[in-house]
Amino acid sequence: MKTEEIKIANLKCGGCATTIKKELLQLEGVDEVSVNNDTDSVIVTYNEEVRESITNRLHELGYPEATEHNGLILKLKSYSSCMIGKINNL
Image (cartoon, rainbow, N blue to C red; front, top):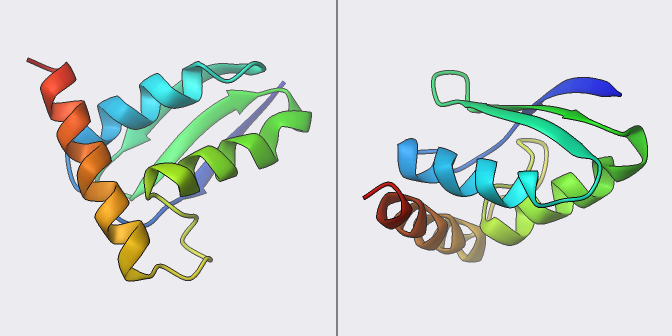
């Protein structure tokens, strides 16, 4: 198992954090997920062979690694993921 902090783009609020945690915990090989809105990062404990799955899922949700190009489409996806997270917190 490995624990890693992944810096991401488009992280805005608790709704974003809820969606990210829920979605990443559904990936096989991911044991723990925490989101830090202050540092724009996700801390994940996982089996090393699933790292690419983690970053791919973050990208699909609109939260690319901070090193990736962050275009308009990803920003729009993140707003959608954010709203879903807010609804799930109700």
